[in-house]
Length: 260
Image 1 (tube, rainbow, N blue to C red):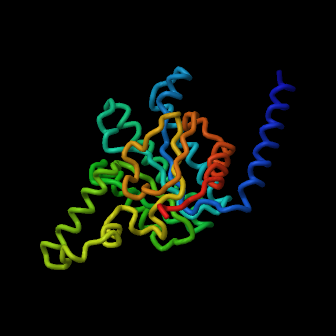
Image 2 (cartoon, one colour; image 1 turned 90 degrees about the horizontal axis):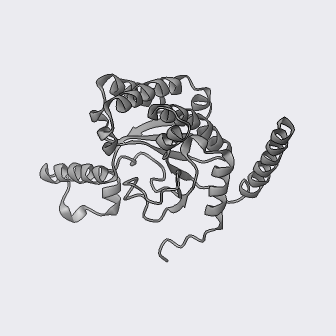
Image 3 (cartoon, helix red, strand yellow; image 1 turned 180 degrees about the vertical axis):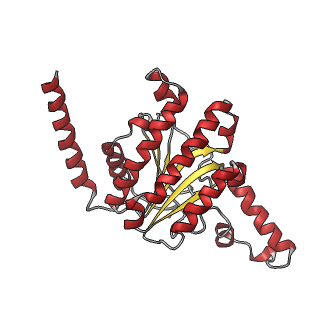
């Protein structure tokens, strides 16, 4: 059994190395966004409480960040918690909030964040989150606000429709105050009021969703107009480096015309 396992591991490593050589010298996506789906189903499959799926899913974030940094990906946006997720059982939501506190604290001490000058930003209606978590978010964002080597964006209390509504409100306030006229409003002005306006490239080149579901679920609705989509039949806690590499290889094979 052990010999078989070692043999399989050897094949896996060879396949991973082969994939790495296939993608590393080609066009790597500048901005990758991932919908982290399947935590609860993974937990159920393994006869664990739902929040344990989130726990193992959070550990996976550290690996994925490292893989993307190694590949030279400039921006990573991860969909961690939607506005609709507040409707989940109270205990599950509270444990998720605890998990966000823990992981944000770890980011402050993460050597990779400082080594690669990664700016960390939480996008969404963060005012809906517990006060102490809002303070932790502010601390992480302040500590990394001058970094511009890479960008790590965590979508928490996020909704694509909410983002568009919030952008419209900001523009409407400016019009009401006489700072902007309706005639001046165009795509560029609108994009300046999205949660992602600070990014050098707001639109993801590649959006990955795990768990086998094939929908965006409100993720980056405006920014995803011309994104390449890749749906993977693997639960998020089981996401492997070869899954990321295969998704990038798929992206590299597609011809992007942007409507031209």
